[in-house]
Amino acid sequence: MTQAESHWYSIGEMASLFGLTRQTLIYYNKIGLFCPAMVNDDGYRFYLPTQIPTLRLICLLKDLGIELKEIAEIIDSRNISALIDYLVARKAEIGRRIGQLDTQRELIDQRIRYYKSVERWRDVTDTPILKQYDERLVVAESFPHSDVTREVLHPTLMRSMKKLRAVEDGVPVDGFGTMLTEVKSERGDEGQLVYRPAATFTVVPAGVDSSKLSDVVMLPKGLYACMSYWGMPYQGYAAERLMKWLNDHNFEPLGNAFDFCLLDTTSYNDIHQQDFCCIQVMVKF
Image 1 (tube, rainbow, N blue to C red):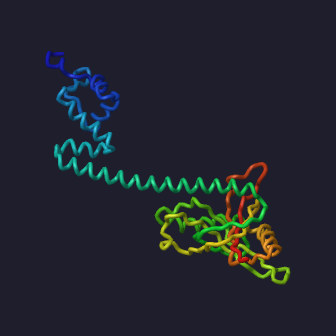
Image 2: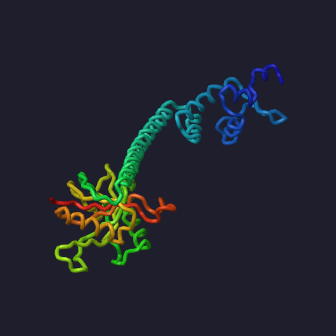
Image 3: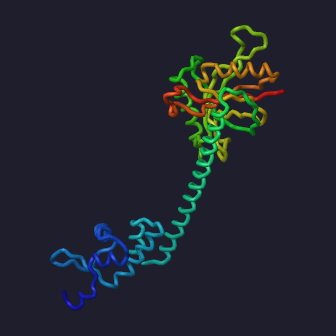
């Protein structure tokens, strides 16, 4: 190596100076981003001290999240105005990502609250209670026919979820279930209401623009009779039991019943092979 070359840096020395790996500099050379000033007959790469500022700028821009392709364009242009434009664009992109992350954080918080509510409902299984709710919105999808089975339930539910997912932030974090409508008692009991599955629904999370959704149903603010249970909403067990409890306690049901599926088949185990649900109906007293 000549005296002039003694001031050069080997690839290992240059990498160490910047806290990089040799493989990183080899890759930069491969893509033409940062090439050695000289490669000797043995294939060893050497860099001049005057190349240090260029690599310093590359590392800075990479730390700021700018893509290597854009960094190459900045290095080639040697234009401060272009550099400012790239940084302004990067700042705007970060702002968008922060907004997305804030939304995801809120959706995660909603899902955490949902699971905590499931734990509370498990503590009062098969026990009718009264609970006050604020207004809630759901997206409904009618069953194709009255013979509801799991094979009908699941694809129908996915069609309601698809409607919700069609809008911004329409993530089904607040649950889903089956809407039941009033029908005349098949046993002919005077004044006895019977509920039958009519549609699936997916709860609209807070912050979603409901005006852009189709088939939205409102659950009004008010007092609801609720009962959590293990079973399937189309079997009618919970609806009949809850209606009997309302009749025994002189409560009048108002409108449709909504059977929320709190835990589905993903929670099945050796003890439970049915969904965990919570049927709710607004009442007047």
